Image (cartoon, rainbow, N blue to C red):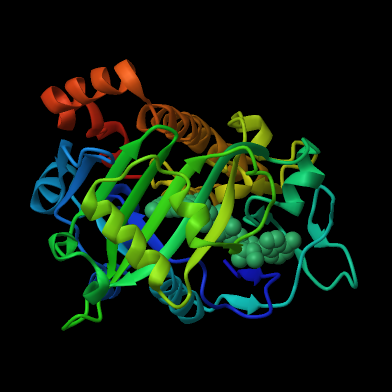
Length: 374
Ligand SMILES: Cc1cc2nc3c(=O)[nH]c(=O)nc-3n(C[C@H](O)[C@H](O)[C@H](O)COP(=O)(O)OP(=O)(O)OC[C@H]3O[C@@H](n4cnc5c(N)ncnc54)[C@H](O)[C@@H]3O)c2cc1C
C-alpha cells in the first residue's frame, strides 16, 4: 500500500513525556519488527506498587518483569514518548510512507471510488482515509457530527524528574501509584542511562471543578499541585517537591473522553472509505495506560484487514467489527479505575482489603494484556 500521513503540526517532535506499554502493545511493536529498537531505549519496571498516599502503607503489588513475560508473552515497558515516536517515524520512513507536516485536514469529500482532502487544494486523492487525528478529530466531526468530547472533570499535572533528584527509596525501577481521595499519583522510569541522568515521569491526576479547557501543556504552579492533597506521606511529599523544583516545573492538561462507538460508527457508512482510529475513535481517561496501546492495536488490525480484503468498504467494516468491543471495554475499564483509585473513607478501606488479599488476580487483567492482535 502507498501511504501518506498528513500531520497538522509544523514538524514531528516531542509529544508529551512518559508512556507505559503493556504486553499487548509490545506484541504489536514486536510484529512490526521494532522490538529491538524499543528495548534498547525502554525501561522494564519490575512491578506496579499501590500505596496509600496519606499513610505510605503499601496496598498491593502487581509483578511485572519476567512474571508478565511468562504469563502474557511480552514484557511491560515504559519509555519517553519522544523515543517511541522517533522509532515509529524512522520505521515509517523506511517503509516508504510519505510524511507531510504542516498539513491539517479540515474536510474531506468522498464518492464510491475515492476520498479527497478538501481545503486549500484537492491534492490528496486516495482510496481510503483514516482519521487518526486525535481527541479533537476533524474527520470524526464531519463523519459523526457528535459534538465535542466530554470534559471528565479530571486533570493531569506532569513533571519530569532526573533520578538524582528522586528520594533515595524511589530510585528503583517500579511503577508506583499513590491513592487518595479524588487524586492519585503515578511515577515510573522512562529513560535508563548510566549514572544519575535517568529520567522518571511523574503524573498527578485529580478530579477538580476547573478541568474544562483543552490543550496540552497548560501552565500549572507547584502550589496548584500541592493543594490537591490534604496530607502526604514523606516519600510522596519529597517526590512532589522534586517535581516542582525542576526547571520545566509542572505542565497541566485536562482530560476528556467519549462514550465508546459501535462498529458501524467507526466507518463513514455512506461510501465506506473513511474510518476512525486511536483517540479519534475512542478517547479515554489514562487510568489503564492503554490509549496508545489501543491505537497500535487498531493500526495493526486495520493493515491486516486492508491487505486481506480486495474492497476497501469490506476491509473497513471488518476492521471496525474487530475493534469496537475491545476499545469500548478499555474505555469503560479506565473510567471504572478512576472511581476505584479515588475512593475515600470506608470504601477505600474495603478496596484496600480486597486488593491486599487478591491484588494480582483482581488487577492482572488477562483479557487486556493477554490479547495478541498480531
Ligand atoms: C496523562 C496521560 C497519560 C497517558 N499515558 C498513557 C500510557 O501510559 N500508555 C498508553 O498506551 N496511552 C497513554 N495515554 C493515552 C495516549 O496518549 C493516547 O491514547 C494516544 O496519544 C492516542 O494516539 P493518537 O495517535 O490516536 O492521537 P494523538 O496522539 O492525539 O495524535 C493525533 C495526531 O493528529 C494530528 N492532528 C490533529 N488534527 C489534525 C488534522 N486536522 N489534520 C492533520 N493532523 C491532525 C495531531 O497533531 C497529532 O499528531 C495517556 C494519555 C494521557 C492524557
